[in-house]
Length: 100
Image (cartoon, rainbow, N blue to C red):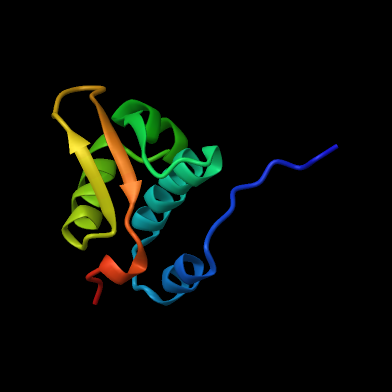
């Protein structure tokens, strides 16, 4: 029996290990990786409610983390606001990240 897994580029894994992300940001990044790379996709349409369920974060903390990750060019997110809204999410390559 094969064990399911999510493939991740070495460059991305090494960049994640070096970057000064908060624990909440890491949880969001891992969820996005699971929902994209885990399905062999580069982007995926995901609702905020589903991300909340996966990460276990409160809605306000999740949205703040997403906003911060988008500002740092780590995450690309397109979609409208609103409760339970869906949007397209993707993790940008480390070359685009603007982290301190």
